[in-house]
Length: 255
Image (cartoon, rainbow, N blue to C red; front, side, top):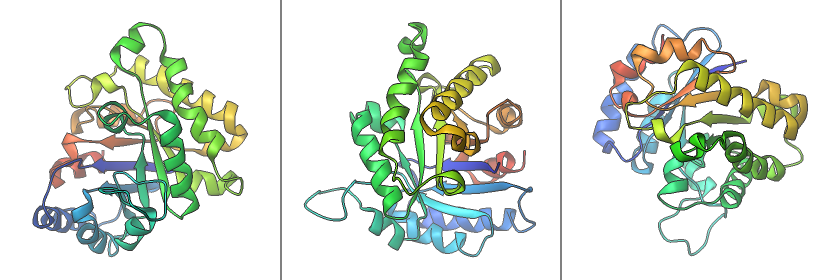
């Protein structure tokens, strides 16, 4: 199974910042990536084309959008369509990031619509799931993850299955309480959550779910990246703050 190391820049970097970063990253990747490893960058919309141009010349590096609207076009001020993302050079998109769910109040049904439509339109999707601290303390980890995963699994295009599904869909588990807080879920907590995620995916999708990459995201840093990647059912990392500097991110890529 491939290992994905992804950088979510969130609302950071101008085009000039992104171009400089892309040059530094490309230089760092000149010697090639470890076998089976892929790198994804999720820059802001304004920097997509700049980063995609650099990515197109770097094997193993791809670019994605941070969000998408589930319609081809229309009167949706401030939104972006799959066609627009593809046109800018993106091949991936995030869906259901905790900040979209909790700040912008996107519910599981809407996230499922976005993920399904993006897949139908040719984008690969990284679906983000995770619980808040109060939900974990209340013993609701499995219930929360099921509520977030089940609608997406039910909405997947019927034609997408087997190896195609594994190539085009990834899941990122993000404990909401560990994003941007400096806190990291300990190995037992990560393994528990990833085991639950894998079991729920297999329940919904059958054996095809065994090949889906499940990433961990939540205050990932160079110091803890290798430990996290060594855990069962952790097939990659979704990196936030530590991805904003190229050298820091490269340390994680090659950990």
